[in-house]
Image 1 (cartoon, rainbow, N blue to C red):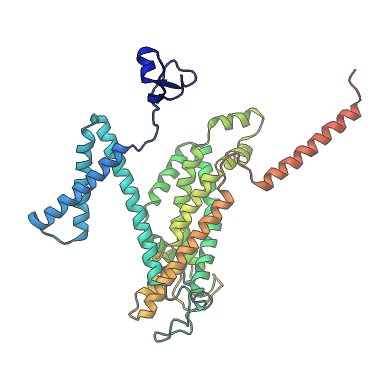
Image 2: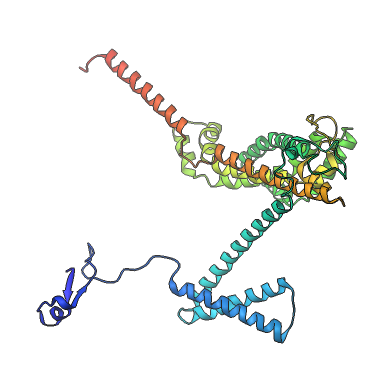
Length: 408
């Protein structure tokens, strides 16, 4: 029944003047009813959030003006947030039970923390870009070093070419050391369980909290003092590797644990050995997660300053040889420039920090493009290769059937 009238509903006689349109009957149901919304955010939630926000701001202003006068923005924000949570809990308790109140309050807290982190990240990026805006549009900032630039030189002279090149060289050498070692150690921890594996996992977990200055002192004492190496990009890459290695091992270990055990069992059932299963089944399945582990380690190493300060030395000219002479990186160059009293150096320091942010973003995008696909997802080239192999297999099978002749 799609259309009824009030009179027809009461007396059975239709009346076109008072037509009431109802919802069409659903398939598979015996009676009509209002549609049930599956959205997680309802109108009552929006009203409760708005009311709690207005209440919190009003009470905070009243308290700061009448009860406990203070003008600190941090204190105002903390007090307003606490009152907001209490007011929201009181409003939700009017329509829900205790479980609903706990659930809504927890959701609000977690969402607000996520928003706070996002706002902090945006503030850092915008603040860095704004203070370095005078040098970022200049071409010389990316193509020159600071070897011929003094404190009184204008911003049209000098740049961060030497620091950007040093960062790329050092992080490339560190990745060439940490990626194979980290993945091999993670595979060992998962495939060869035992007391020694537990001991290694404990050491790795302890090293994730290792202060960066300790890693720099370790490389300085062993490589530079004992082995008589000079301060160079190679020594800095070793110090960065000490910081990156436990991060990559720990994250890769967690990712490899998430690979379903049924894949291993299926590979063993087909006659594959343990290490062939690791190489052809486990690692390709966890490729996306392993890429994330490498990104986390790279993010930890690319921003290190104190290990590089102790092991690479300080230089203002371009040095592409990591085994000879000091080699500065972008974090170290930023640290040195911002610490100078000249305003031009401080501006260049913020510009170097902005270049570091862009470099990290570029490395992140490249890493996601290389290994960001999930298990079973193939790219266009892989799909074309699979189609060509399938076509060759079909031709081979048909040729074998023709050579064998008709059955019987």
